[in-house]
Image (cartoon, rainbow, N blue to C red):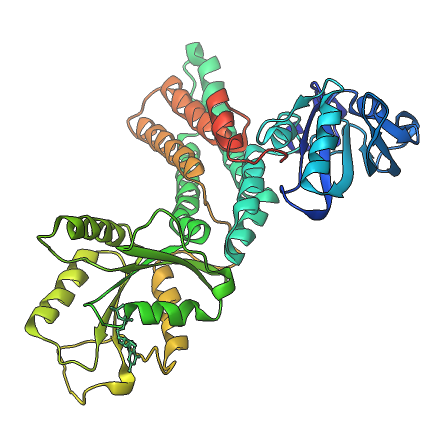
Amino acid sequence: TTASDPTDDATITERKPIAAIATPVGEGGIAVIRVSGKNAIEKVNEAFRGADLIEKESHTVHFGKITDAQGDVVDEVLATLFHAPRSYTGEETVEISCHGGVLVTQAVLETILALGIQPAEAGEFTQRAFLNGKMELSQAEAVADLIHAKSAKALDSAHQQLEGRLGEHIREFRQQIIDATAMVELELDFVEEDVEFANREQLRELLAELEEEIDKLLATYETGRLVKHGVRTVFIGLPNAGKSTLLNTLVGKDRAIVTEIAGTTRDTIDVDWSYEGLRFILTDTAGLRETEDVVEAEGVKRSQKAFREADLAVYLKDLSREPTAAERKDIARFQKAAGDTPFVLIGTKKDIALDLEDERMDYDLKISALEDEKIAELKKLMKQRALENKHYDASSLLVTSSRHRDALQKARQNVQSALQALDQGMTGDFLSIDLRSALKDLGTITGEITNEDILDSIFSRFCIGK
Ligand code: GDP
């Protein structure tokens, strides 16, 4: 399709030039200001002292000075030129590498803007790349995911999407539907002759297969969500069970990358932790139990919410204390409440455990956080349980976006209703409506079909300069 052919000149529309700082704000060796759009090179050349940029070839770099309207030097820079369509946006582009100070970068940008160039909005460069057919919508979204990725696996899956693997699948699905629609509509053209051209059995097979494949892709969403956003893990247990000690032991070595997530209070503490490329968000729930205290009640609410939304529940039982009847009940209650959410029962403080043979307590593992005993096993167990029953293999394509999932679900519904129409012996026009809707649903993923709202919501996730 033309949508993914970056060398096709005809698909590029050059819009008015825009400019923005493309590197993070702060001090660095260099900063890059990107200018893209019609006559971008000619415009930048007006403020550039050095080579005549207009005469230079694409993909060349030139040393020079940016000067303001008064002719004063703002900074010494390198200008990299990209002729359309061989640039990120597909448009004529200049990337100005200047010195990396906050003020100097801003001054260079302002000089460029003073030439009559508009400041770029968030994600506008990538939006133009999409509009110019340099990438599919799902690929553009992957750029945002790539930037926001917080674990190795999330990065992997964004890379896959950036390579266009999701788009490939979707295009295959669409082709199958187009084939089916063609069969049905051929029949419609000859309706007066009362001929059934479409082999209904063949059509049914095609649609059933399609439904199955969409299902397979949909099934990866749960895993995709975990990979992208992390496994929400709650630690439950009586006060002093060793919850915060374990939390510290788990994240201890990786402390440099641990960030406390803002917006939580003393009632729950969330920490980011990564194990073998999978991201976990660990929550220490202080109060999960009933209370009379108003302030504490708020904490309980928050903890209960964390528990309800968890992808993994870890109950910690202090082995140095005999389990009371109330505690047994507590464990049973949480296990039941966890429902489909994986639940593990961990005995803590193994180093000072009472010598108890208690068949009623069915521990998944006994650990000592202080002595670093069985902690490696615990990490493995957490990953294994978090991903159990999930389709997971490192190389498989994952659906990570809820927008894509919604579109796939709608497409599946339409394929299902086409199948029903087929079973009920409905005429081709009914089938055709369903199939065309399914086609449209799938098209919204890659961006063949799109509307302003979708684009706005996608590209607003980008930062300025991307
Ligand atoms: P929390 O209230 O569940 O967060 O429990 P803490 O993590 O604050 O631990 C309560 C007490 O148990 C602290 O004094 C810890 O030092 C101690 N503790 C935690 N884990 C271990 C362990 O593995 N072995 C021993 N001996 N003590 C532990």
